[in-house]
Amino acid sequence: MDFLNKLILPFLLSMVLSSCYEDFEPDIESSPVLCMNSIISPGDTIRVKLSRTWRWSEGRVGDSAYSSGIDVNVYGAEVVLFVNGVYKETLREINEDCAGADIPAELFPYYGSYYVKGRKEYVAEYIPSVCDVVRLEAFSDEYGSASAEVTVPSPVAIDKIEYEISDFRHFDYDETDSFYFEMDLMIWFTDNYDSTDYYKFGVTSSGVEKGDAGDIEYSESLSFRDVSREPLFKEHVSVLESVLFSTMSYNIFSDRQISGKNYPLHIRLEDVSYKIEKGTLIPGKGESRFIFNLSVISPEYYRHVIATWIAENGSLGQLGSVGLAQPVFAFSNVSSGAGVVAAQAPFIAELPVMPIVEEALQRKER
Image (cartoon, rainbow, N blue to C red; front, side, top):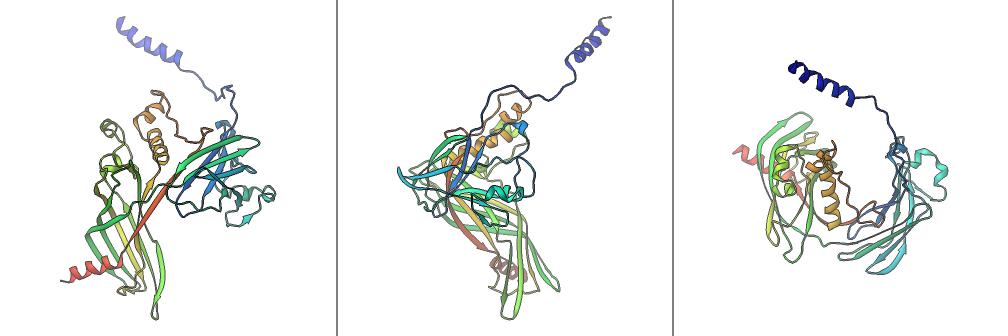
């Protein structure tokens, strides 16, 4: 009988605790607030995106000209720019369709839903400089006000780029020269010793390049897979998280471990593919290149990305998703509590691929 009780009791409990369910919306008073987003770079145009917060029950937000969904963009607002405490200008409202046409704001509502999903932003004439303290203040009759302030950081140069290639293969076809290899790189830079700095790193390719060399036209392409395992990219991942969860690292990091030092980022590129159509392997004429971007980012940028990582990949976020921890909220430095105004200072370095291929071919022929 004791054996049966052990079986029956859990069964009854499961019947009591299990039931039908239905969607409902908690009757919580909430009003939409103004959301402001902008990433400011020295020497580049200041662009501000204004939207509003929304309840999940309103539906999915449309994110392109071809998708359905609610439109949360805020039109007709006033966005004011201050630099180093001095008023500069009131930003101009731009509404563009996906073809890039500049549509006057006052005519925009009449262009239909196709244009509603285009780019909407507020643009400044002033071009920011390093160390500018930029303050943005936005006002909307319907959603209230929002303001934020950020300091534009100074860029840090990439000192040099070292690389080694392996598993080099060359296939000479009638129409195409194709090269495949793996690549290990060391991207050297020197951190500032007198400040706390935050960084973002990325590597891209120039994609497809077309041109001519004499009477021969050529088309070349470069692609690869970035599988970098740089330790600094995982400094925000705890040992416990790396063991218990399938975590992903972001290519952002601080200078906590390298303050004031000369340091190489260890970058690993696999499945590198370089192709030149028409069989035109012409020394010195290749335009394809690797593009390395080392950006110093503002603390607000760093905190926002880290908060996003914690919510989506960290232990607290994963436990919170199943109700075992408090939810993780996104970081915001905007007065309304919605959005982020951040800054970055990029430094771009390029590495042409043609000399790498020529060097590998010469070694192979020896």
